[in-house]
Amino acid sequence: MSAYEHFDSALIHGGAGFDDPTHSVNVPIYQTSTFGQHLPGDFYGYEYSRTGNPTRAALESLIAELEGGERGFAFASGMAALTAVLSLFKTGDKVITSSNVYGGTFRVLDKVFNNFGIDYVMVDTSDVAAVEEAIDERTVALLVETPANPLLTITDLRAIAQVAKKHGLLAIADNTFMTPYLQRPLEFGFDIVVHSATKYLGGHSDVVAGLAVVANAELGERIAFLQNSTGGVLGPFDSFLLQRGIKTLGVRMDRHVQNAQAVATFLQSHPGVRAVYYPGLEGHPGHDVNAAQAKNGGVMMSFELAEGADINAFFLGLDLVVLAESLGGVESLVCHPATMTHAAIPVEIRKKVGISDELIRLSVGIEDERDIIADLGRAIAAATGKEA
Image 1 (cartoon, rainbow, N blue to C red):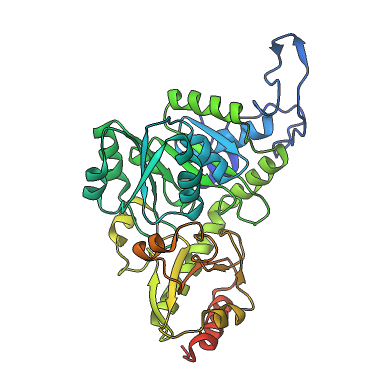
Image 2 (cartoon, helix red, strand yellow; image 1 turned 90 degrees about the vertical axis):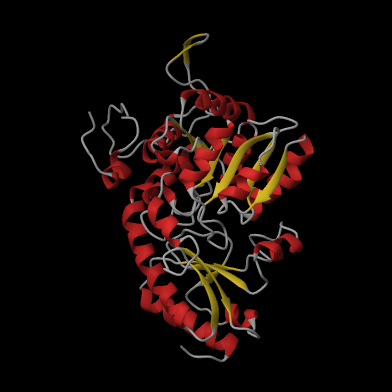
């Protein structure tokens, strides 16, 4: 029986117990490539670190518990985790994915798996009827992001899981933006959850990692085979760093969300901003659906400056907020999706789904909210000539 009942305690004490004779408070870093064996094939729990490593195993057990899944798997990046999941499929299969999706997800589907005869179709997954209409005899999976990157489009997890079950499809969710602290797709009937753990789970912009969690033992065996066969595993030291980051996930996310709500409210009222995309705002499309399946609106948001704004002046006008790829660190980060995170998506598709050249994505950090707002205000004024 567990010594704790609540999620915040699981962040610190969760996962499989570790039998360490020194009683180390933290899981040791087993920085080794291989392990001695008693006799050929008779080994002491581990044989080779690609196949399994105690530090990585502790992390995998932890994320499985946090997401409420059967087994967890740690990879060298979020894209490595997604690649392993997509490797479940074969030539002739088809995947339906969210039209508003991370550029790297589009790229691996369009430029890698397409070469192996695995097709995809992009659908507005917030429209459940459109998803069901896109299903045909070749469809094997539904791959969704919610909130989606970068327009924070909301997909009804329960409804999508029901559609997948009805048609015998795998339901896969990218839960990077929310983390299991705010949202747990497996609870709504999903089969697989993936994370770019580089982001909020790590939380300090010092590790690149990916995680996958499966809902049942059969999927666990299949992903374990792919993880070992393809070898994109997370190393012991990075596994240690990620566990360290997860311990503070709860307190960090609470501060992140508090700041995000204040920043979104500021941006919404600013005359130099024409649109704000944030699920925590009542007017955001899908706000009620998100409220029913997530703890709150999360941290990520996007916004568009007023018409005629000089977007480069905005980026040059920032001092505190950093222009950089990625998200989810303790520092506030902005990016320009059209030329950065979503540049792999052809311009005609970007425009069709609403990723304009004026769109700015913001990951709100845990600095003092007043400093974040002041910095954004100065940059918006530099770009638009309009003060808050």
